[in-house]
Length: 129
View 1 (cartoon, one colour):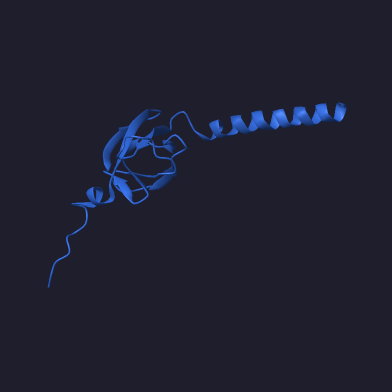
View 2 (view 1 turned 45 degrees about the vertical axis):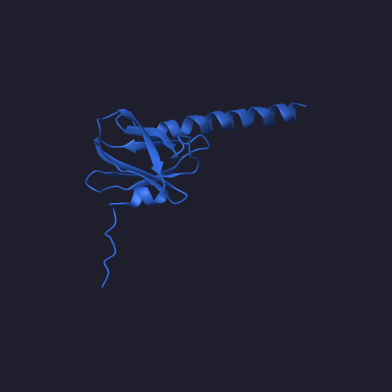
């Protein structure tokens, strides 16, 4: 019985420490962008890829949405950022020049368009020879 109690205590301590640890990796001066990705039908999209980069094209990062379509990008420095989401062949427009100050959190909603609409105007048209 005592052995089970010690094991239970160890498990609880491990879980509490694991929950505390990620919070320690983010500095108070770091900024956060969080949000949701919605499909063309307005419903949240799970496992969508969200690409984030500084507006100058530096420090690209990618995260995926959770089962409710939410994403969080932590550890960002003060700068302006561009974001885009994609899933199942559909893309959102780029959300450009999202300004972040030190320690600020911004919320963004990215809406996926159907594959053909999202790409129109972004790729050069094929020319006939």
